[in-house]
Length: 139
Length: 115
Image 1 (cartoon, chains in turn red, green):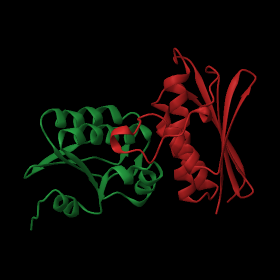
Image 2: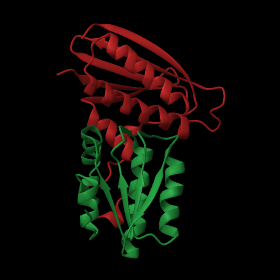
Image 3: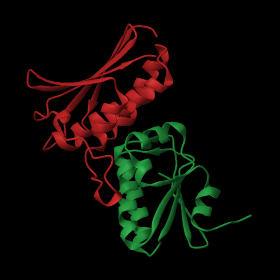
Image 4: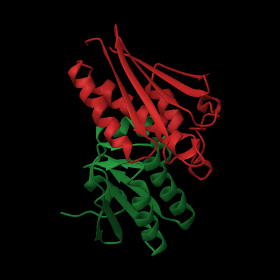
């Protein structure tokens, strides 16, 4: 893997996710990021950015979400920056994966996926912005 | 999203395409739940073309399975790609949904043996 970084500014619109995933895939391929890692990072970024767009803003029109991806050493680090209302998705209770079908909740699946796919996930509120950082080691 | 429907015996076979994301999920939900509302009880979703699914898409499978269970019906999925199967395992869906390796296996599980 080669070291590098990319910053992507997205309109707060779920239609932008496809473009995000395409750009991250291109960046990853140029930097020799394994395809399994790219798949996991793209899915995690999809979940995080979608959450912000759908639930973060009262009116997402005109708002932007910034995504930054860095390859450093043997790690891929990505972060999502938004100025939506303060929200730490990591505080949500994990879904009960052992519950029978009738009791399985519909919520919480996305953030559970993010936690499962990544090696580390952290949240910070910085300068009035939510910053969600995910890390994945390259094996 | 392209969704194809095909009836074999009393099994409704639904084939989806490669991308089941936030944009595609509402249309898929409407079609799948609509089939159940129309009386289908044995629903087979052939996921062979599926390469990418996010939580919005996963939720549709969960909704359909939850809706069918009290009606005495069943949802069976088949032909999941390894990357998609990994996501289903992660989210614990392999415990609560029947997932068959191939369409023929799924049909057999519904009691249909065809040549």
